[in-house]
Amino acid sequence: MPAVVDSNKCTGCESCIDACPVEAIEMKDDVAFVDADTCSDCGACVEACPVEAISMK
Image (tube, rainbow, N blue to C red; front, side):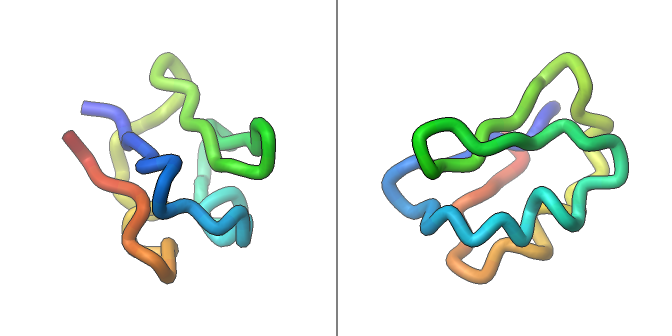
């Protein structure tokens, strides 16, 4: 199951982008967006997010 970003919680800090080993995350309108086809379901972005805006659903 790929990571999902709660756009209401995301602050645009880009910590998740730095943490993603497969470069599946990009910023769209100052909010993180996860490419589900590229995401490896590792959870690194979930751990890296300081505001808990990312989950594995």
